[in-house]
Every structure is written in structure tokens, then in C-alpha cells.
Length: 119
Image 1 (cartoon, rainbow, N blue to C red):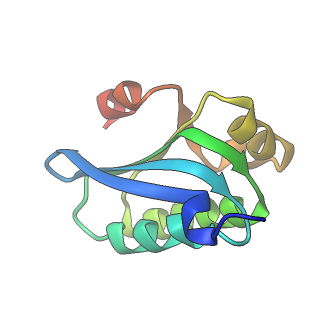
Image 2: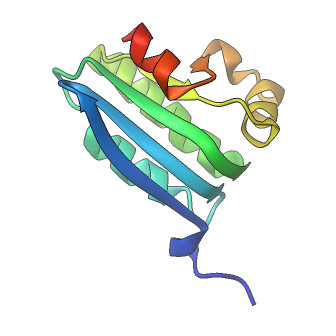
């Protein structure tokens, strides 16, 4: 029996520095759970932020709906002039990004610390 959608993915929001928000994402981002990322990403992206970091290190699966949430967030960040950085090093996340040619769209780093140094 499949798990309820709410348990497939979760996002914890952290503000390690003034104007910097980190979204720590875990689980599986697919059609039934991508809103778990899309909602906080949309509400977090506001004018005046120094940066938004999306930590995908604990993501086990990144489907097309998850990619769409990231692309939508990236477009919104660009409109606001807020840098959006993705933290990813695992195959489950990097392969879909590479296969869809989205490496040119995103700034991808390997650790949250690396992302925080860039902002």
C-alpha cells in the first residue's frame, strides 16, 4: 500500500543568516509530492532576500513534477533578483537535471556550506 503523499517529501525551512533561507528537502519529489517543495519555495521567495538555497541532499527521487517546481522557483527568483542555489551531489537528483539540460538553468553546489559561502 503506498504511503500518503504528505509523507513522500518534506521541507524544513532554516534561516542561517539574515536574508538567506535554506529549504532542506527530503524524500521523493514526484507528481503527488512536488507541492511539498513548490509551496514553501513560492512563499519563501520574496523581494529583499540575499539568497535562497534548496538543499536536495536527502532527496531519493526527483521526477518531472519536482523539476517543474525547481524551474518555477528559479524563474521567480530571477524575476526578483534573488540568487537561487541548489545543493545536490547524488545521482537521484543530478541525473534528471543533467538529462533535461537544466544544468545551464541552475547554480548547483555540493554542500550547504559551499552555497552559503557563495551568497
